[in-house]
Image (cartoon, rainbow, N blue to C red; front, side):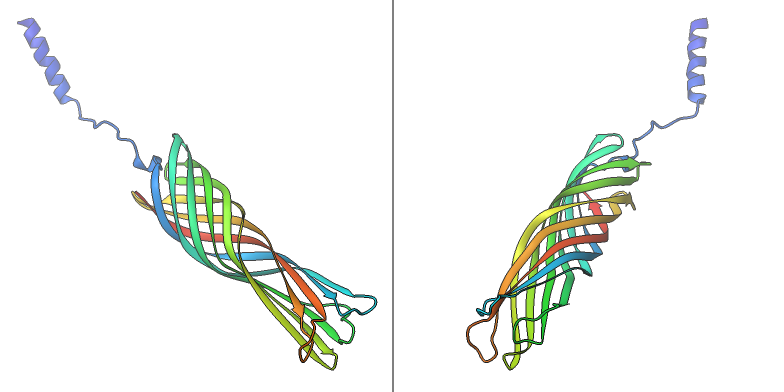
Length: 256
């Protein structure tokens, strides 16, 4: 009888204790899985340019005119991204991301050489570079701070479509002005690196701010310098642009 009463008392004591639900892991701490989103930003292009004009008319001595400048330009860039994250530890992750951007960035160099070619009163050398579109494929390594905020560094392959326009103006050459133009379009590859911060808005949505540096290498072209009224070109103008891009952007991602 005493044993039975003790069992009933123990059961009553258990029932009297307040019910506590087992702790559930916070989903905000788990960033693993696929995601996709959109972004919009602004790119500032730093572009060292060089120009060389070579006199091929047979004048003695032949002249070579050169100019160089480190010019800057910019424009809006926007597009989309897709990626995958894998948690390596409770606060560390690794992933991969690819993005593709439309771009309105351009730079222009307009240089007056110190000495014109023979028979001309002045010589202007112009180069214009435009970044039509670009994309990247990057690795990401990040640290999850306070569960809902990700700090990361990123880097990898960059590629883009570059237009190069050139012009050379010789004033009063051989009794009349000489204007020569040319253009070239090329798909270039290079590298990119950057960093960013991403934070959760809800269970599946995140917002990010990101900086990327892109280096797409050099684009070069050459055009013959036309003689007024036609005839044999009297020189060759070569120009090149090194495209180095600084992109700051914000983005919105949906995590599957």
